[in-house]
Length: 296
Image (cartoon, rainbow, N blue to C red; front, top):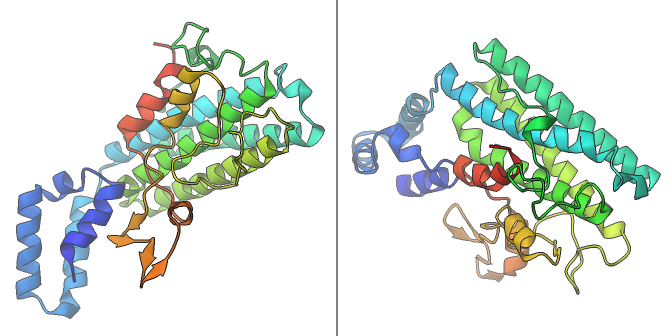
């Protein structure tokens, strides 16, 4: 059993795994000891005990994670509340407006759930209203690179897709920090999967808009992410650079130290290998992405 491979894979989802175990050097020494003195049949149990101790988070840790998720859900909920009544949405088809309204309702429900969960754990939910956000991405100036999000339907959908893809990667990045509470973890993963469905639906909606629709020339927008491609070209370099942060790292083609492009000698295109797996983002990376949309 290759302990280093196991930890390397956990580190991709939780970069702080070594600190939770103790230190990198200490963790490796402990794994070496386990491998030498325990029978193979006893190793899984020993590892389980070690990780239970490492990931036996306090309620305060879980509350911190949930408040982080709640911040993102507030952002999305307030965005869709404005989106469905915007001049941009007024140009959408009836089915598209219905979809945006349903997504809004989902995000509002996520907010309500997270607030209840945080309170039940003895925490205080973070509170945001529409007044706390600048959906132009201008950090409160109202003149950011997405200033036309509520007047141009193409831009509205592009921003919505980016928010949803960012949310998926955020939940994935924090899942390891919820392992000590199965109920919360299960609920978070359910939200995670719904966010992914939102993203796929928004891609379909974008694809149905006649050109120009902000989809790069020559590209066919799919329901999934290919390499690190956002599938969005706004023509505004600042906007495109901001969007790209939500997709960097998705080009990864190695999982569990296995190179997907060459499994058992089979040739698999890097595009397909990257499409088969989603990648997490750290809390710090997510906050960097959403910071321009939150007023100081």
